[in-house]
Amino acid sequence: MTWRGLSHVAGFITFLILCSASVALAEDFKAIDGKEYKNVKVSRVEPDGIVLISKSGIAKVYFTELPTEVQERFHYDAEQAAAYSAEQTASQVALQNQQAELRRKLAEEKNRYWTGQEPAKDQQDKVRAPAAVVPGRGQQVEVISHGAPVDISKHLALGNVTVVDFYADWCGPCKHISPSLEQMARTDPEIALRKIDIVNWKTAVVKQYNIRSIPQVNIYNRGRHLVGTVVGAYIQEVKRYVAQAKTSG
Image 1 (cartoon, rainbow, N blue to C red):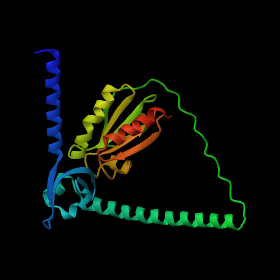
Image 2 (image 1 turned 180 degrees about the horizontal axis):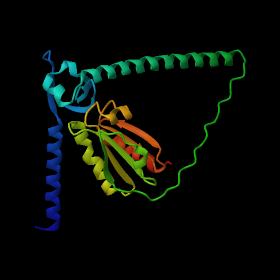
Image 3 (image 1 turned 30 degrees about the horizontal axis):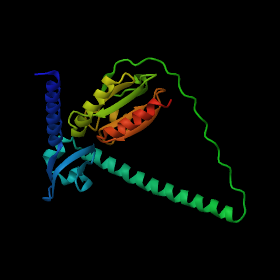
Image 4 (image 1 turned 135 degrees about the vertical axis):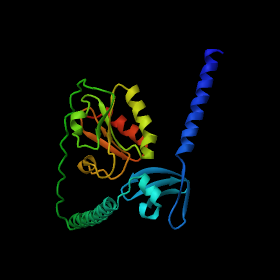
């Protein structure tokens, strides 16, 4: 067989593998009340539930609605879930108050404008000088914690883009995005990947970085500044932030 023929065969095999992987990601879930979620993919895992993607859209299903075996699979903990739900509610209230305050300030500024008062001058943001690019990549892919506290800043690759992946072995979406992240790091000398295994929702590293959903991917630029965070298995979003990180800091 010619080299071209072998290439076509290899491409076809790769296509079959990708198709199989895609099919494997689709699952069926049945809630305690009998409601069924068929052919859905788990986008991310949170302490109180899982976020599912289907043809009809995105929906969150709480662990209290799911059978025990599903709860155990995703390491559901009632105490952690209650604390997370309370934090989410508090954050929503804070956001609503912030928006109300913003609307009030805008109304005041508009009123000053129409009454002829001089509007306050906007202060210009200080432009931060870009960090020097220094070769110091270290290992391309490295697991830096298994649930224990860790100082991420000490593991960032100065002069290169660092991608930090918060994951768990029992997290399906984590397993979906992980190979893509590792391939990025191994094929692009400007990218370093640091992986943090949260193990479960009770570990010290979860509390340290307030992890509330996995997979969570943080992207840092060459100057070790956080550029963006992607929650969920969205590799294209990660790539977008990586491209941004390469041109900043």
